[in-house]
Structure formats: structure tokens, C-alpha cells
Image (tube, rainbow over all chains, first blue to last red; front, side, top):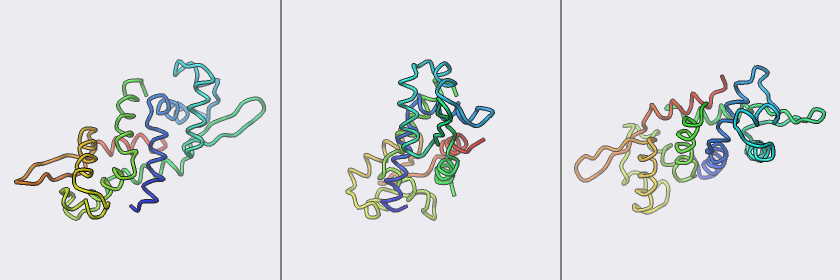
Length: 93
Length: 93
């Protein structure tokens, strides 16, 4: 692994290395429709909408989640390519 | 994922969310003998032994690497159970 790849991976891992963000990723992944809006997520994590939106933004910026705006709400889904890349790196060869 | 699991995973991810530590994990994993001592790692990452030892200690404390002392040197290997747990979590269900 070269220095550039390592910097990119570290940035990604930092984004998910937070208990609330891990729970958000896990909740989005567990949703039957494979997506969730902020309105679905505030109650399970026990945090207000501004805080949840802030964490979701960090995950979108890092390429962990995709965001799609439909009407009033934004819908978040797992960006599978990113997580597969991470999982592949972490799996012992 | 409950709050306790999330806290434990976040701690693990934080340990590997650093470019130098990612490269060290990758170098240990890539070694033919599946282990490496500090003496094998300083040159590829371009850092001195005290710095490399510091990063290795963080990885051992977080359960990412195992350390075995043999004679003068400590030998580091990937703690497969930890990385498998991470990879399983990150793989889309």
C-alpha cells in the first residue's frame, strides 16, 4: 500500500471511527429499503436532527453514504463500492 | 448495532485510521512469514524505530496486531479475528 492509498483509506476510516456514525451506517444498511432519511434515524440513535444531519454529512463527504434529495427529504444509502474496498483491505489475504 | 459494540468498533477503527498505521498493517500482512519485526518496517515507511514502535504499540493495544517477544526482537502479526470482525461489519449484508 503506497502513501497516497494509505492517506485516502485513513480519511475514510476516520469518518466511520465514531460510535454514532457507525450506528448510523449500520441503521441505513439494516433498513429494508436500503435507504433512510434523517427522520428514520434520530429516534434510534437518540439524537436531534441537526446532530444526525451533521454526522450524515461527514459520511457523505467521506464517500461512505450516498445522498439523494427527493421532495423535502434527503435519502441516504450505503455506497457499496467504498465499503467493499475497505472490507477487501481488511480481510487477511 | 448497540452503543457498546459501536464504541468498541470505533476504538478499533481509530487505531487503523492513520496512514502510517495502515501501511504498517499492510506491510505485516504482506510479509511472507506473516510476521515482521520493527527492523523490517522502519525502512519501507521511512520512519525511525521509536516512531514505528509507537505506532505498533497503538495497533497492539487496539487488538489489530499480536506481539510475540523472541530474543531481542518483538515480532508482530495480524490478529486475524479482529480484522475479520471489521471486514464482516463493513461488508454490505
